[in-house]
Length: 417
Image (tube, rainbow, N blue to C red; front, side, top):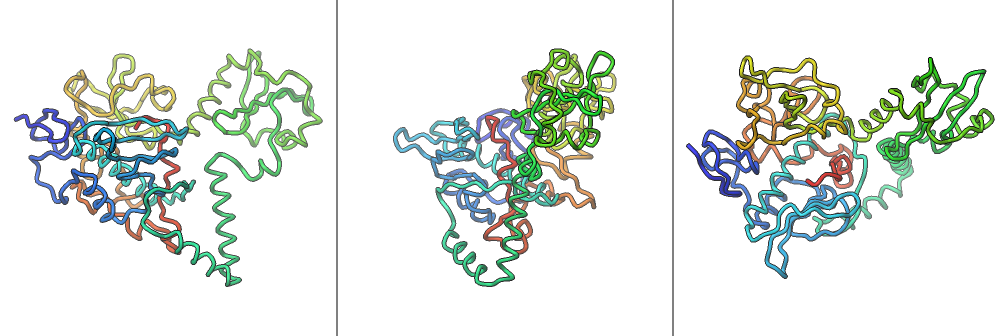
């Protein structure tokens, strides 16, 4: 039997636990979760009840028209009376997810995105990830500015604590540099200039790329083409600007045409792009060479499946095309993140593989390990509110007020949503 989503109005089967269009829970399914928020005030209370860090940390601003970069938010426009759901990207540009008079629909848009972010942050925290960035700005906060200042001054009065604080600050700075692809060694010993070098009778070419911020790559001519070198294979004298300068051949710094057209160059650009994108490939449906593929998780290159017409079911893919395993290439074949009846694809969530491998510990078709390897296993599949609680287990042990464990710097701020 078909039922209609009370949030977006889309018709879907009453056997579905969530609306396949917007992700809202089905009204026909009994849930253990508390009542889903339908107003901005209810969403704000839900946020508080989960014990989440302040808005400035999570970058989710409820009831706030936040204008700085890197933010999700919802507010009511006093001029028009419309409810606006938005995302501010890294460059400060804004994407409006929804603008209209339906408050419940608007709240559900941000509610679903916030839940997804909480699950992703929990998985990252359990894997030992440390915050790579702290975002400034002010909007609505749940206290702490004066408390943090008082705490800091108190620590500085104690020599041992001061030394420990200095160590932590240096460690955090190094982590920030590492997260940005910057090595401390590269600051003290800048990498070589791009161009040709001659060292010990051998020719080398140094390629740098500021677009991806991944440093430099080295190549040597071989059999009329070019061969890429691992960093360990590059002479130490050539790796740093001052020591490499005597070996600079004076050739042009522009990329040689023969290198530009080489497989080694293409491979290096692909590696830079993958690293800059944290090696992520979006979960969803792909059409490659007439074959339908489904990627069940966007956290690694595994978990690929294809539709087998012969057996009429999804089958694990042991030979996924290389183009689908790189985010910058896979986007050319991406079709849709969520199955709907208008596609020619078959719903992965109706398959036995999904039921056996993902349904008991997944969210929005993103799978999470549930083993003894130390990765997060807190999702129970019931969509209970407790799955989204952010308690002290996710905070640093030494000071939960200062370091919430939430890393908004790892979020995808360049996509529309």
